[in-house]
Amino acid sequence: MAKYLVSEPEVQVGSWRKQLWSYFGPAFVASVAYIDPGNFATNIAGGSQFGYRLLWVLLWSNAMAILVQYLSAKLGIVTGLTLPQNCRKHFSRPMTLFLWGCAEIAAIATDLAEFLGAALGLYLLCGPALLAHGWTRTETLLASAVVSAGAVFLILALDLAGYRWLEGGIMVFVGVIGLCYGFEVLLVHPDWRLAAFHTLVPTLDTSSAGNFHDSIYLAVSMLGATVMPHVIYLHSALVQPRLKGMAAEGMTAVVVSPLPRVESLSDGLRRQYLRFELVDVFVAMNGAWLINSAMIVMAAVAFTHLGAPVTDVEQAYRTLGPLLGPAAATVFAVALLCSGLSSSTVGVMAGQVIIEGFLDIKFSIFLRRLITIIPAIVVIAVGLDPLKILILSQVVLSFTLPFALVPLLILSNRHGVMGSFVSGVGTKVAGWVTVGIIVALNVVLLGQLMLGT
Image (cartoon, rainbow, N blue to C red; front, side, top):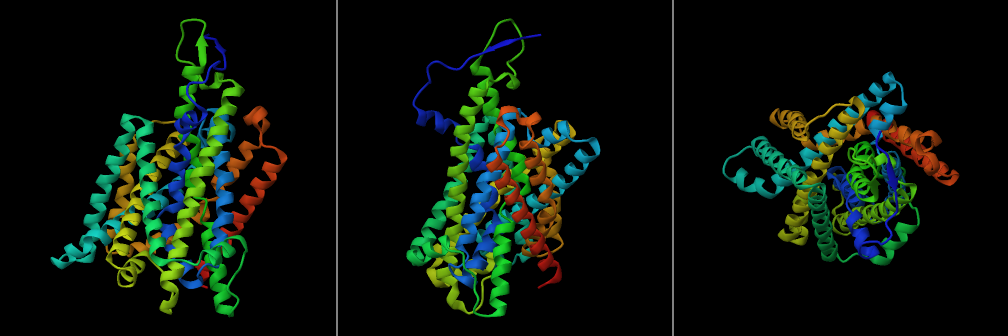
């Protein structure tokens, strides 16, 4: 059997900043889930109805997201396996199949919603021209969905050139979304002092019983839907390519043998990667938090005087033009399109990680994309309202979220899985408190949606 001598590099190549940049990427890919089309609708509704009051929800949601995403990355770095692979390794076969079923439901629901979001963004940009030539709304949406599917295939093809290309492409999309909302915020001239106050001080609208109930509902929606199940699985996989690269570069074989194994990496190299990944997670998640906050700020200034809340992204697009000019509406649609395309790409990647990890099979990511297109095309072709499907998908995710979070906490807290990297008492407590809050709020959200209250 081959053996390796594991040694730390004596001389670091390049500066610390250059090394850090080479590790940027996984968390940015995961962050796309926090600025997907569902976030657009929720944040706009919250800002248009309650102004700046719910900004604090995003701050606390972001803190939870940082913890959960770091734990997912940590599990992947320490074990050299994805979360689904760890579940298959450490849980019973029936439990593994049950978790796989829940994960598949989450992946399909997520991808359906995000693909519809991409189609809706393209529809807002190009639909008016087609509608003017006699196309129906359903036909225009269907054409937008087909074009969006082709665009996602092209984005996924970047991975053929290397994982850095795909990560770079996703980071460009995140950057465009950020620039679009930066532009929107500049147009509306917000009250920064009031925005900062409501970011730091938790407040709800207590002016009436109805407003208090609605503000609770929206706060629960924003907080409970923050952590998306599919990126919990995905982040543990996104760190693997660099881990394998470290194994190839950081070890010296003493005999002719196969490629170095990830399992043979020293604790020192893994800790170095964890430090870099923590920075990656911190920067990426805070970037997503700023974008989400910009959505609320824009809606708070632009829509609060309308007399009725803006409840969906298409209504927001139609309203922005007359209020702030055609450029504002166009930029909004571009941001939605970038959000839909990038999040749909990430959803497909997560679906591949889920099926391969839980079932120990090889599955083409392009086949996965083709399969997940079918439900979205059917939804549009039969004339169902994409916005209602987006809401339904959030209900489905509320059901499946605990079945990603709980296994992550169980595995990351096991000494037999993590060894010397097992979570400390503080992290364990924070993790279970986070999971408890998210699950409880999702249950409340689900109950309110089912009761129609």
